[in-house]
Amino acid sequence: MSLPVAPKPALRRFHQASWDEPIIFELSTPGERGVLVQRPAARESEALQRRAGQLAAVKRSAAPALPELAQMRVVRHFLRLSQENLGADFNVDIGQGTCTMKYSPKINEVVLRTTKAMDLHPLQDEAKVQGILEIFWRTEQLLAEISGLERVSLQTQGGSAAIWSNIAMIRAYHESNGEGGTRDEVITTIFSHPSNAACAKAAGYKVITLMPDADGYPDIEALKAAISPRTAALMITNPEDTGIYNARIREFVDLVHGVGGLAAYDQANANGILGITRAREAGFDLCHFNLHKTFSTPHASGGPGAGASAVSAKLVPFLPGPTIDKVGEKFVINGDRPQSVGKIAPFYGVTPNIIRAYAWIMALGAEGLRQVAEIAVLNNNYLLGQVLAIPGASAPYAEGKRRIEQVRYSWQDLFEETGISSEEIGIRLSDFGMHYWTSHHPYLVAQPFTLEPTESYSKSEIDEYVAALAEVVRECREEPETVRTAPHNQTVHHIHHDDLDAPERWAITWRAYQRKYFGTGPATAPAPAAVADPAVR
Image (cartoon, rainbow, N blue to C red; front, side, top):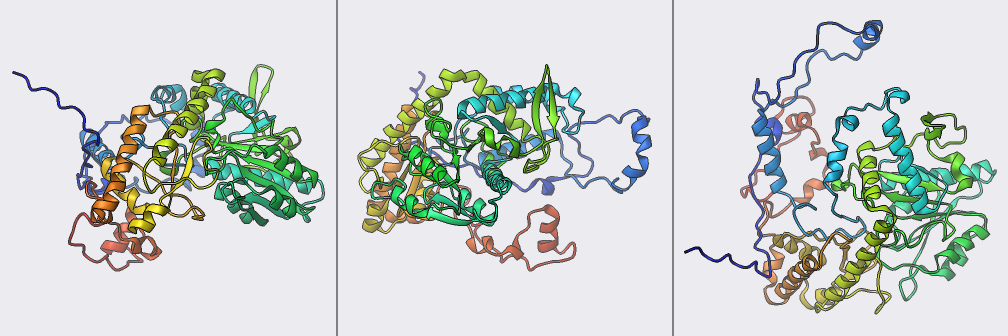
């Protein structure tokens, strides 16, 4: 008689796999091979022979000291490492608000990994890479339509790089008008992405930050007081990282234009407005997208990302170069752009992510993109209602109103009652196989946590996430030590934060690690103190 299959419990029985896996260099055995690579025929091309003198200066004197492993051991090593992590393919990854962690269709990986894409080299003659140049050009056309702006550059390698590209173009524009020396202020808001303020500051601008009004919207009266002939630009995220959409955004842009400034739209939070509203209709001069967020290329723990900078007609001359242009039926790399801000990154851009984004957009089409936004907004507002039903949770600002694609919540009430912080709740939630994020600084919302379900998750998955969150809150009140001593089901139970603040102890390469901790080279440093508990790292 067969036993019945037990129903899935309301709270998933989760325990992280622990393999105590060494790093790959420690597994290396001289002479092991995963693939036998045949040597090419013993002849050099004429081109290589002509450049023999040049190549001699960069030729290695010895083979690189790469790890040597059989194929089975390589597969086992990386599978074990993957099991020691949480990620979008493993768990309900709702908790990465402001970073739009969503499902990346695996068919896009199939498209990317064809030899037609994988065997390309950025230094090939443009006549021999017409296919990839066409994909770049077509992706630019699609993003120009999605934003409503004139031209797009895909050169930047992530969102912050795209913001830097924007500030570089803003500076070049004002310099071309003879106002580069007088327009030295950039206005942003406290709930816009911090990279806007950071890039403007790094470029030498004075940054003016607008605080929210009583309802959480950027204070328009504060904007009126801030603008002047010194204003170079407004750099603003909308919806902001609270999930609140500023419906008066056109008024903000018009006020800045009224004093001769430019307006740059940070659209890293575009996932809830695709196909619904565009930068053009709000009057923006520039905008940027994060392809590794909105357009479903892997976020990859902060890289490799891909950014896209879009501009109106008057800023086209300043786009990063070279650009990819269509001339007749051919695609050419155009480096003859005297007003361009120049290269922001090497070559054309992050080609694998451009291919993924292009495939995602083409698969969905215009109606599909709008449906992405509609489902993301629906999921977010369903999650909002469920979270606010948990005693101790709140969503400051715009109370009683809907949010777009994320919410900056607060556990302040629960913290005052139990003394348990948002960070401790997030650590405990990992014991249920869930990811959770607090907030980037500054912590204007007390005891924050920022959730963004996107369009990827079903109602049942959102319910599972909320059930785990509610269970942790119950523990905060009834079993506080369970939360305070978490995580319990993870491979690592504690991190020595002192090491994170001691650069002299860092070792970011295998050679540096050997030098510092085994004394096999110069610049050695004392070995770390012994740790009795292997779960403490």
